[in-house]
Image 1 (cartoon, rainbow, N blue to C red):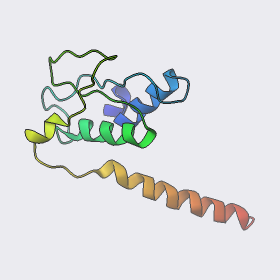
Image 2 (image 1 turned 135 degrees about the horizontal axis):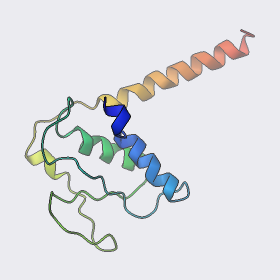
Image 3 (image 1 turned 30 degrees about the vertical axis):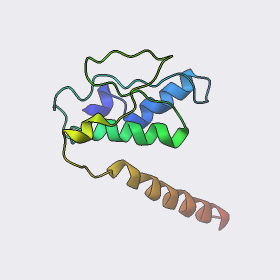
Image 4 (image 1 turned 60 degrees about the horizontal axis):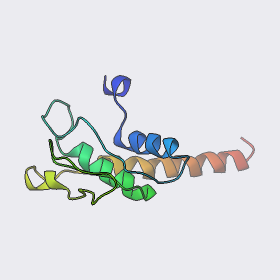
Length: 115
């Protein structure tokens, strides 16, 4: 259900980069998350995953508390505020990258052996 109607945080970060011409720029502002727990994943997961995805590509990201105003040209709210009000969570989105790397290496080996 979720992939049909939402991007993952990593996809959101990539969409932001695409809109910036492929390079980090502007301010990534994740929206409609952190206000209530509706999804089958931990409540804090979107914030953690977005933070990781943005850091991975060097993109500035703003995390205002719900209802908190900020100016994109001013000081960005970057504190992971949700950590003070939620349980620590696992970071399962970090694991697929390892599996992808293994699959890519295996595919290259298969290609080089003439298969």
